[in-house]
Amino acid sequence: MANRHRGEIAAEIGGRTRVLVLTLGALAELEAAFGSGDLVALAERFGAGRLSARDLIRIIGAGLRGAGEAIGDDEVAAMTAAGGAAGFVGIAAELIAASFGEQAP
Image 1 (tube, one colour):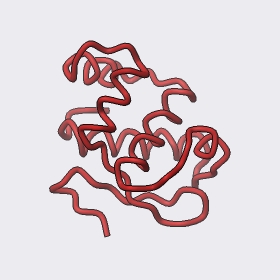
Image 2 (cartoon, helix red, strand yellow; image 1 turned 90 degrees about the vertical axis):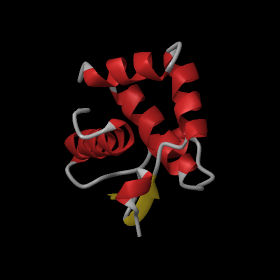
Image 3 (cartoon, one colour; image 1 turned 180 degrees about the vertical axis):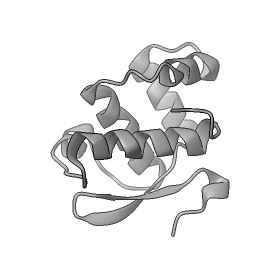
Image 4 (spheres, one colour; image 1 turned 120 degrees about the vertical axis):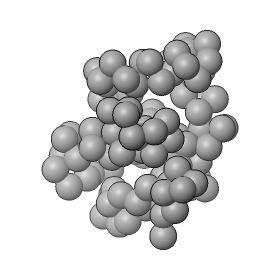
């Protein structure tokens, strides 16, 4: 079960409910992937509300790994979510909001 107070969310991905969380390690992974110098720059990038499919894969993959899943981005890319692409956008938005506060996308 996800604990929102710890920044965790639950989402159905790949046919099962999974927990995602952006730990400090996961955030550092995203900083490196997006070339962001710090958390403020990362939050600003997410706050712009323009995420590519590759961005979604990286965010969701980092969230799954932050919650303890041993999963690569290629595996995340092959997964499905209810609502298709819009479902993945919703998952990423909820994860970002849980990590950075409700004002995030």
